[in-house]
Amino acid sequence: QVQLVESGGGSVQAGGSLRLSCAASGYTYSCMAWFRQAPGKEREGVALIYTGSGITFYADSVKGRFTISQENAKNTVYLQMNSLKPEDTAIYYCAADFFGPHGCSGSRLRDVGFRYWGQGTQVTVSS
Image (cartoon, rainbow, N blue to C red; front, side):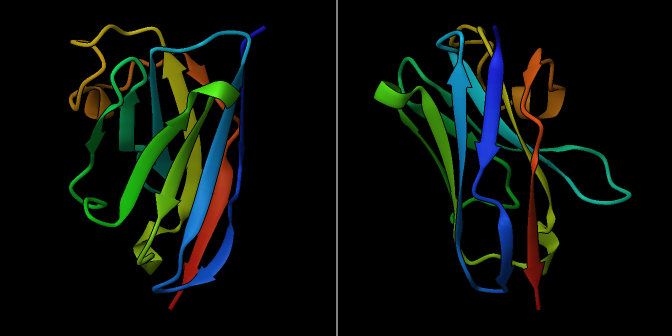
């Protein structure tokens, strides 16, 4: 059974940090990513990792502030978020699929196309 469970969301002041976790069960996915959706806005790709090689991609809006990483033993992907801004406020979703190295690239953050999604975790950044 496919299951992605996010955790680690919460409220923080601007400049603070949070770490989100996405625990995958059922399968070991080759491509995992974080997306977010703010109220009234479209879903936005944030970060992506090809789990086979550890290659990562980021949206320009989070480069230098967010880091996606993996812990293979736990089949878990993390999103470390530093220097948070009020505009980072959103529901953050974990996504996963079995894309190969060419399919698991930066363009996937715009194209979406992931079949498996978590339930989301709220991140609120106050000014």
